[in-house]
Figure 1 (cartoon, rainbow, N blue to C red):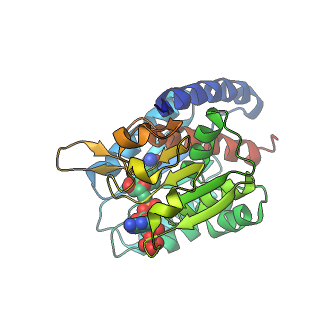
Figure 2 (figure 1 turned 120 degrees about the horizontal axis):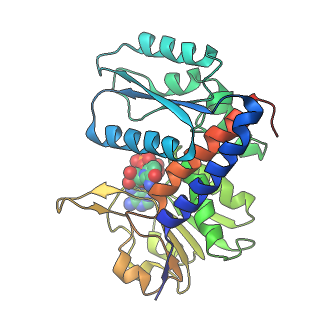
Figure 3 (figure 1 turned 90 degrees about the vertical axis):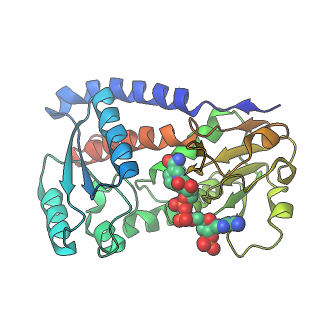
Length: 285
Ligand code: NDP
């Protein structure tokens, strides 16, 4: 039976050590780190994620504000607001909560955030630097996934890692991080044939699709580390992952629950990235 990777506890431990770090930095810089979260529209899930991020800032000791726009805001107006945040010296991090309304180009908005304040790590310059293995802001969810894998004590070197999903936000960047950790990597997607036989090769299996229960226990190798990124609210009103927990836990050595696995780590890594931007902007290495 698999051991559960307690993402909630690991995230709390990380935030607690970031709080100590924030306290140490405060007198050196003369002000606290500052994160601006931009929220467009009134999507309840986005609003709830945003609340979680602001609450985490309060816990760690990062100043924050929430900049809200109605869903009717024009792309031009939003881009101008981002430009103002880029120029505002007290702002260390800018996070635009996704998704955005259809009339606004997500890519234009991401491109507009200056790289030094890109706490999500989505800017093409950060993405390119991650690809090349250079110093960069890594995206929060993939960074959190790597911390969860490392928390198991399982060595990544030479292991076969299978990533199910290839989105820009999760699948592609986590694949790059696994490769940097010297895994042998296989990336799958919606056109992959015979997914079962590929997932069964994985020593480390990361699933980021958004299809509840896609991965069943018989698709998982005995002793694999299984990281379930998926979060879907189903008809039963509950949140479900992409992995069928019960059957998979019988085969895996370690497994993340949903909720309480990857989700809390994403927020903890956002806090880490905000402090990283704050330190770099203030020449603290
Ligand atoms: P996307 O919809 O952007 O990407 C989904 C990926 O899954 C695509 O690459 C798609 O392939 C692939 N896919 C679809 N069907 C299959 C299939 N049958 N077999 C293999 N691959 C398939 O989703 P995201 O990456 O943004 O998110 C994935 C999940 O993770 C969602 O449930 C989301 O809510 C959750 N999530 C959780 C976070 C957290 O903090 N816990 C953070 C971000 C996301 P193709 O490219 O061919 O279309």
